[in-house]
Amino acid sequence: MKTLLYAFLSILLVAGIAVVALQGSSDWTVGEVSRTPEARFAELPDYPFAANYSDVLGYRLHYVDEGPRDAPPILLLHGQPSWSYLYRHMIPLLTAAGHRVIAPDLVGFGKSDKPTHQGDYTYQMHVDVMAAFVEDLELNDITYFGQDWGGLIGLRIVAEAPDRYARIMISNTGLPAAGGVPGWIGYPLFRLAVWWEGTVEQLGPSADGFSFARWVAYARTSSDFDMANLFQTATTRELSPAELAGYAAPFVGEEHLAGARVFPYLVPSQLRENDRVMREFYARWDKPFLTAFGDADPVTAGGDKIWQEQVPGAADQPHVTIEGGNHFIQEDRPERLVELMLAFIARG
Image (cartoon, rainbow, N blue to C red; front, side, top):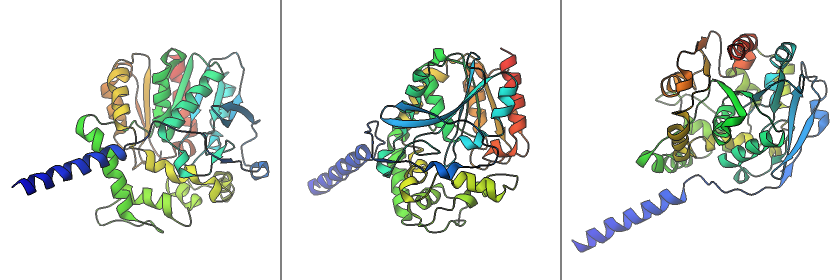
């Protein structure tokens, strides 16, 4: 009997150590970086914007900054594996309406510094860097828009400095959160599921449909990360070869791909912290909050309801489901997004 008891306690101890050890880290250090040659960005279609750079917490960040400097800023945050090129059709429309538009490239993407090792990327690093970027530019009265990881990061930086933000608009994104036991075991179990997948060279339908763990394993381990196919399968309209080349431009070789490869692996890495932000911050956010999700995005379908139901500032807002909007909705319906955003701002 004692032997069984000791064995059971040993299993619990090992399991407890594993749960703690496999949590997402909140610590990070500046990693060795590479920079994409400027020649890669020459003559990109519909991307005439001047390059701006800011040194933030040890990394050089690139950002687009268009429109009158004295106008209240609109902050556009992209996700994985895109960059500010994603907003090329929206920026001119917003500046033509008299707005200042800022679209940074996250660390590891676009023209920004790219740490060369996957281990140098953490969720918290991206939050810290983008929060410092906003502070460095001394932005206030911000209209924030985020999609994909632009939401996972942006929704956190708003919570860190809410006085800088006037309103929030999101599309096809969310804030993965869990409290209690699920918050503790969620990421360790997810990491084990990805490990179980092993090396994945090709994505195909699993027996039970789409497998997020398999997609994550593919992103991290495949020998050929097919950027063009990824974007084309996540948009409704057909992108031209030149446009697909624009998305591939930042990634010359593996030394540039670490961020794009590891981002999906980090999605559930701060479940407990995000749960705290949802409970302590967004449950009380009473400034305007608008959702405009696409009707053709299989990744975030239904995620808009969480915000509509839980955020006070989302009450009585004209939330929209945009027809013909796949995951990269900025490619499919840029004019509609701008129309909604301008009306959102005009309502005050």
